[in-house]
Length: 490
Image (cartoon, rainbow, N blue to C red):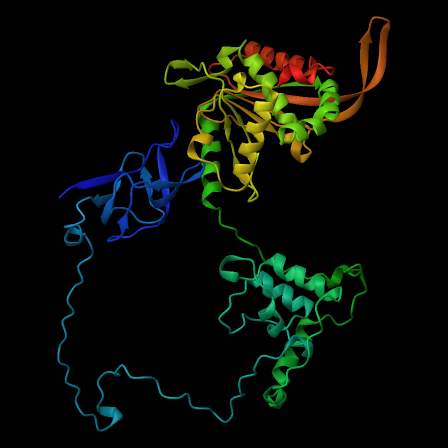
């Protein structure tokens, strides 16, 4: 019998463990070579683990959501298919031992020592007790004071909004939910309220089977309405109350669980602050020539190369050129040793649709021209947004660029991506009046200005090196040739 062991693969030099998201195969399934066996996740990217042999899975050693170190055996495959079925390790069912139970005949309830496990008798109705008031639609001014007795779950916040907006249970049932398991979220019900007020949602017709509701006593419900309603209606303008005394404070909060990626990001950010003493230096760059050149060539560039020309590949080209002059910026620290990386691999922080952050890496950035950099940047960004990044796409970075200006921020103090020692943040490009030095004297002109901020590990990078490196990057941006000929850079 030949057994092949499937191990957790190495996914990058800085990745030491992975979380099992899903098993695509189970014990007893036949698997082919390179066929996907399970899906895993790291702090960088989600990935698939293929089979390293063909055969029948005889043993699965870890469950979903288990965190497994790299190199650990996670499953075993019997490559001898003739004997594989007999060797499958599966839970052995425990035989159920049955006993003959003798139930004595009980002539009266007084002789029963213990209640037998029989269905409870029907509930007797007390004549003097008020009958249960059934749910009445909100159109009859009944508030959703408690969670509805339905199979669908509604959070207290959703019920509170439904109560204040006069939404009945039947309406609430029809609202499509985008939350977990189809739950109605705050956004869903607020969109429904907006559509209803604008007339996009037809008015709810009275239910045809309302006879039992009308026959039910209404006294208790009326008392609840009298206690909760304000004595005098407050004036409303644009959906806001004019009387401060009419404001109702619910005191409710919404608790949101961190997803797996956010937990990992939080951990790595805290770890980075504990590992590296951060220092941040700032500089300002006149990027007018960059803006003018891109505006002049971007349409022809996209038409010819089939990809857009953004500022990111232009920034990366300048950064790679300066790193070649400052090799200490392109290093990492292991104990008391400084490892200077010869390859210049620049990571670019990319925001995902979920709001999380990932850093795909442009390998050999100093070897690519503006066309190659543009294709690399756009390809990695598109793969990140569509969850198509491979583990290799997020490993091996030696320096990181983050564009905080994408979201309108002027500057930032970024946190170093370990085990790197520096990260550069570029802010929003703004037009400002600036003093321009010319041979004929100083003048004032409108320039495109941008702030740069460099966070660096003070264990290795001192202020003189960090500030000098940042200044050189600003100068490199400013030296961009606005008359750069197209054919020279293809």
